[in-house]
Each structure stands twice: as C-alpha cells, then as structure tokens.
Image 1 (cartoon, rainbow over the protein chains, first blue to last red):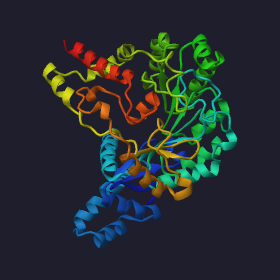
Image 2 (image 1 turned 180 degrees about the horizontal axis):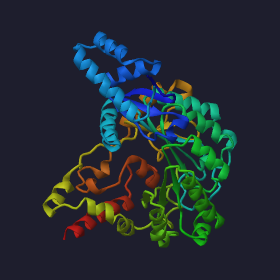
Image 3 (image 1 turned 60 degrees about the vertical axis):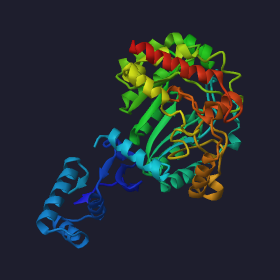
Image 4 (image 1 turned 90 degrees about the vertical axis):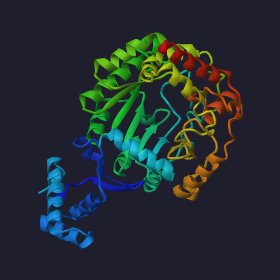
Length: 88
Length: 350
C-alpha cells in the first residue's frame, strides 16, 4: 500500500494535517486531520508498506501490544482506502 | 471533526502560539475596473514595474508555508491581470496551502477556466458589484464588466470550480443588493456580502464618503446576522460591558494572520500600510516575529477606554488610521456604527 501522489503531510500549531496539492484538489478539496500516530503511519505509507510492516513500526515506536497495533493499522488503512487515498 | 471545527481548533492554537496560519498575498494593485470605493486604487496603480516578480511571490509563499501558513488568498487589484499569474498560481498550488482566489471574474475566459479546473483552488471568490450593466458602469467604470463577470462565473461553475459570491454594498449599488443575492442563490452559491467599506490606503476616506452607507443602512443589511445573535434584554446589558477594556488590536491580524502587500511588505492585514516588515530582506520568520512585536506597540485606543459599546463596535487601529490618520484617532462614523448596532439588537429583542 502506498499513499497516492500529491498529498502533503504538515504539522501546524501542534496539529497534523494532510493537504492536497495541485490537480489532487480536483478529487479531494479538503483537509485531512490526523492524530500523531496517524501521521506516523502516513509517513511510512508515503514510501509504501504492508500491514505487517506498519504494525512492526508501531510496536517499535509506541508502547502498545500487537493486537491493539494491528487493529489500529487495519482501521487506519481501511479509512484511507475508503477515502481513495491509497494505491494498492 | 468538521472543517469548521478543525479551523476553530487550529485558530485557537495558532493564536496562542503566534503562528501565521492565515494570510493574504496582494499580487498587484492594478485592476481592469475602477471602482469608486476601491481601497487600493492609487497605491502604485498601473506601475507593474514596481511589483514583485513571480519568483519573489513564490519565494514568499514558500517561506510563509514554512512559517506555518495554511489558508491563504491571492488578491489584488485584480490578480488575473498579471501576465505571469499562472506561473505564480501553479507554484502556490504545490506548496501545501489551502488556496482561495479573489477576483472580479471579468478576465475569466474558456481557456483560463479550463486551466483552473485542472489545478483548482479550494475556492474562487467572485465579487459582483451589482446586477446590471448600468450599476457596473456607474460604480466600476465599465458596463460591459457586468456581463464579463457573469460569464466568468458561469465558466467557473461549468468547470466544477468551487465558487462563492461576494459583494460590496455601497450607495451606487445598494438598489441591486437583493438582485445580487438572488444571483448567488439561483446558482446555489454561498453569498458573502460586505457593507462596511473602509478608507483608501492612500487617500483615506475622502473619496468614499459619497459611497459608503450610513450606519443605520449598514445594519439593515446585517439583520440576518444580528438575528442569529438574539439574546435576552438581560444578556444584552451584560454584553454591553464586555470587551470595554479590550486591547487595541482585538483580532487575529499580526497574531496568527498576515497580509503581504504588492510591495512585498508584511503587514497585519490589508487595512495597514504600517507597521510593516520586509520578509524578502530579513526572511519570513524574522519579519513575522518583528511584525508581531510591532503590533504590540500600536497605541491603545484611548478614546475607547471603558466604552460599553466595544462589544458592538468594528473599531480597530487600522480602521481608525484610514478614518483619521491616527491609530488612536476619534471617528464619529465608527462610534455611530457601534451605537446603531446596539440599537438594532435592542429593537430585535423587543
């Protein structure tokens, strides 16, 4: 899975958000707000990663058990898929 | 979280931390119209050789983005009058900003609308100055401009570009107010009227006195907003006293919003010619920090100290400067605006 091109992740005033760039505004005219964990996963997905890799990265970065991490990753990537933000 | 909730939360954090998340870029003061109440007219009008280059604007946009800018607008004059507008716009579109374009709509043709639809802004705000050729001729110096503006509007909509309608209500177009609103509603567009015009940045109020409405007339257009704020007579008395000891600069300007004028000067908002700093000389961050400090040095509003009508008053140092030539001058017009708003709210409550 990989985030589609032409999105920019930004941190502004303590908030994480994603802004569409250029022609991406045609199909996404808005802003995505993310939690800190969401931003962490988004950055990995910009380069491309599978569910297992995302879970492993979460386990390395955060004090969380694997079951919770996997559930969070699935929920997050499903939301991105629903928003048509991922190239599968 | 809705976009509105997000912006409220972002605004609060940015205000507290002094991050310039909102901004305006005045790409030019040139315009193909000549509106009688224009607040920019005279500020180097027609002198394109003094304007910043496209590269300089893009440099400023990037630096503002790096400083935390998110929601910004491109304005003028008429920004589309610049030969290199596309170059500036395309670069801004890739900076990670939420972009709004302010225009009079008259220069939008098939080709431009199609190009814009491929890299659209978050919104285009078209200002309609009336609903007829006659009104445009009297107010803007060109009757044909009405048809061009309507043509531009329709091209934007045909190309699925998010568009909003603005209008500036003055003496010469007040009779068209309902008709302009009807145009916006007929297209299902958000309508953003403005009836509180301020003085020209160069000549102050001397050229707008004939055009601006009286405070009573202004709030007759503001009724819808006032009605949203309906409160009990007891609350009204409580509101009256609020904000009476507020600081001079009461808004977001110079706290978390900025304006870069056509000369590349960073100012608190489009009402101000000074204080200013020059981000192209010292870098955006230093210019912003310096401006924030300068804003705190603007003198307090001595004439307004303890005034119980501050809660209803549009007073600010920028407006007073344009009215009186002093940041803390006394403007009878502004005082009347506050009195009239309080009176209108009281009448709604009755």
